[in-house]
Image (cartoon, rainbow, N blue to C red; front, top):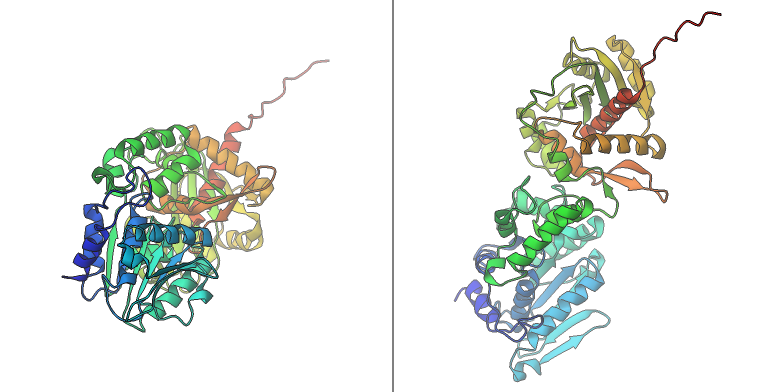
Length: 506
């Protein structure tokens, strides 16, 4: 028998430890069998599984860990299985699940198991080739140094704290190589493409097996086919039922906001931000602004130009907003070095920048840095002949931008805004109102969709918001430029036009 066949036979010989099916034999869903066959195949050392929350991941990983401990899957001597979790509380949940599965083992096997809760969560199995151990670790890389695991399971890897999570992963990965072991990474989607778990999926390495069950981007949150795609066990009695999932989808749609964002992340397994802070706008709110038909949203009236100048070697973006019609356009630029493809790999977004370029949304200019005056000139040529209502810019870059505007010979009203609590909170509120009132219309834009997916806001105790970067490699420059342009457009529309006072004869 292959290792996968041994694992399937062992797990299906156990009984469900908790829930309404407690005491009944475990029946693996087809997607679980598929993962075991792929991840435990010959020549595979890394297995990656991404599936929605509550889809039976815990039973699968706990079953593999217990089977490995007992030598039912990999019978090498002195086996050491390390299970990584985000926190100690999550580690205890995994430990409880493994110990729960162990209760369905024959009595003579159970007598050889030792369960420890301190100083670490461990389960030890003793036989003539042992002792063998399962140890559950919270995401602190220092606790894994010096180990030589034969199997590592990283539970909910997509939601570990970045620094400590990456440290634990690296420590475990280096340890696995000592004894030719395997590593399994199992999780719902991380909230962005730059996360280490996302990179395992998007850029699989040699010797790895990747299986992802994710609803299509942009799908309706209550689309039944999308729900099935992210919850492949629901039709087979593994995890939540389809009826329950559909009811939760309707609840999320009715509540909107963070409830809808959480539904997409955890139940549709999509990569959307779910922060303790607030999103600028949700993915669904931005998608309501996108349209292929801009017949009634033309380039009419004055245009407001929002400018977000990035660092010398990072992205800079410009947004063009026509308040009279609600039309929005946006472009962004990077320096030419490194190339867009190389920069995409550095930022963990693979070929996304190249795709943006092919769509006419992202361009390269200059050499190692963005030449500000030349960039502004290029931006203004895109609206040549249009009346300019204002150029709106971050006052933090006022000196640099003012010099570049003079060198480029640009003549237009200048508005300087801040991204702090005062200006930022007002601009965010005006931008959100414009979006909710249907006053922002844009063609489908990968540049803008990516920017708004990464844009979050910090909230102070008084409820004021300011824009912040959600992730280290998130590019929110286009979102910042759009925020400035649309907010200024809302102010311009709201200003009462000055009328000449009537002449009063005395």
